[in-house]
Length: 448
Image (cartoon, rainbow, N blue to C red):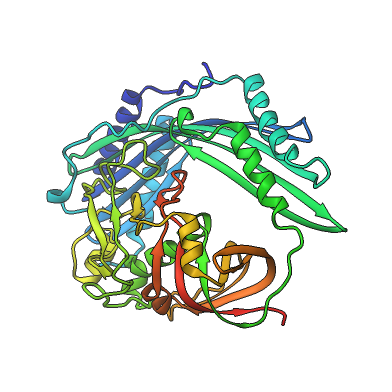
């Protein structure tokens, strides 16, 4: 078996799925669903030019869910033998028999299941030897350390990873589909030092296809430059200032949105965006599209975890929230229909407002550029936001000096409505593609 070859052909995974569904039916289940998957990969890390780790991973699994009326049971196994499959189904059946009825449980509506399965170009195995992986990782780290031989004093190393996986999802309504996919990434992290003070920073690139990765040298160079530019950090005077979230941290703002509009938060009434569908939650300059069919997208897929067909939609239309993120269970709890988001959102594309990064700085004038966020001080029930941060103080549209040991605070409802501009500097490495985000005003707590 070569490093990029699965242990099982797709047909074997399909046969296993059918076998599990048959076993569930034979044990009296009214309905059932199964997920069969396999994954493998290789990760190589170097530090100070020396090999630090070489890791191989290979795993497989079967998860089965059975329904007796509206009672549900789930079990899983990593053993594909007939004995293990029978035992997993029996365990799921036993669990279901001891659970209470849940009127919202059950398979997805069969009318909503996917029937079209376009090729989204997600599978590109990288035939790269361990030796070649080591060479690439060393080139990446060398570039990071070579930015300034005196300034970059320590290294946390560089890592190259490549992963392949395949899966089949099937249910007793006749749905059976799946596909293979790949991911690869390259990263570096180094420490810069000046007058006894040290600053760490990193950079990485990730993609479905290795040809879409940034070069080893550019990743390392960026990591080294980012660490060096943080030297000499200081605090700033406490006050209210415009805040510019750099693209690599701006995606977290959208992550909080997704948490707030996800079905589980909504039916538990633990969201600051409760009953917000159809209302303006962002400034009118903000439009966010969800595109499950983006070629080589990091979250592309023709169906969700329940087999429901995905669809492209405008999630935020000029500031207005057009819909939620729902799977079948949460949709039933809310009296709505699934949005094909069982398992989470698909590719989120935040449209820019036409400015590049330099223009965003100029538009901000004087304020704070945030390049790193620390801690988890976000309350999705109230929308209150308070996180440690580091970045740069900007004066008259020009970066003046690095800042550290500060806190940025506000409320997400207000922050979303105060978005002034979104840059064109989005990063393709994530399933959320967003440029730097300028917010009109936030509270900034410094040491002065």
